[in-house]
Length: 118
Image 1 (cartoon, one colour):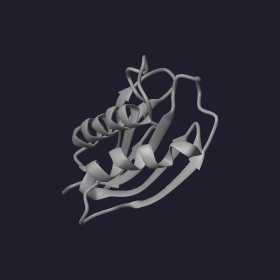
Image 2 (tube, rainbow, N blue to C red; image 1 turned 30 degrees about the vertical axis):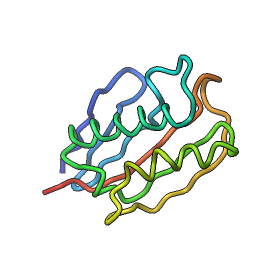
Image 3 (spheres, one colour; image 1 turned 90 degrees about the vertical axis):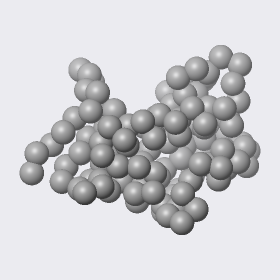
């Protein structure tokens, strides 16, 4: 089986596939200026859709997700965006934790593991 690296850089790849599995790097919002948790979550979920498509998968095939929030008090705001996006017939296993993120402008980071469509 081959390993495919999607959008690799010197430090990391945005996604890696191996066999039928897709591993996404932690995704953060691309535009954080004046945005809150809901908007940042929507941006991240859009990026997850894009990366999964590039890997031959989609949100209905997500197996697990880990959501990191800079402030757990924003849990409901993140869930509002998540609930509007997630496949209701195929919700993944998910954990949500509070964590200090890489930069103060990041309010949310999401990591997913998915199966590829074959």
